[in-house]
Length: 191
Image (cartoon, rainbow, N blue to C red):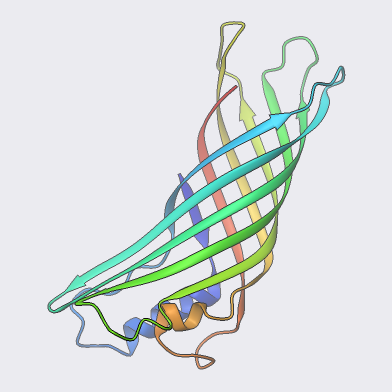
């Protein structure tokens, strides 16, 4: 499970809802989502190791009104460098990761009935993220380990100049060309 907070994007969606009082259902914010990731840690004889990772997150916001159905689809792809710390060398139960990632995104707007003006229906962006992750190993049979984890990440500057056009159908009126993001994840890791 992935949670996303992007203040400029939230502001654009809220302005979209406010400027269309005739809508029965408001457009929800891009908050809940799903994420999957894979990582490779290089072998190390100490408690600290490092590695690389790749993750994909998907967020959706949909509102269906009479004669108008709008859906927003956001895909985030992260390429990461990971510093991994185990609490013990022999029998580690807890682990902590410091993750530095480059983030790329695609934001797509779909409207039904279909509009012929498709020029501003998508936006792309790029930024960097710093995240911390903590996990607890609950099940290990010597070959496979399961561990629940929690992660918190922050993107101080995410540049996406066309996001407002995709979210609010305006350009330069309600939000900046960039936003910061706060992400939170909970999940289950297999290693």
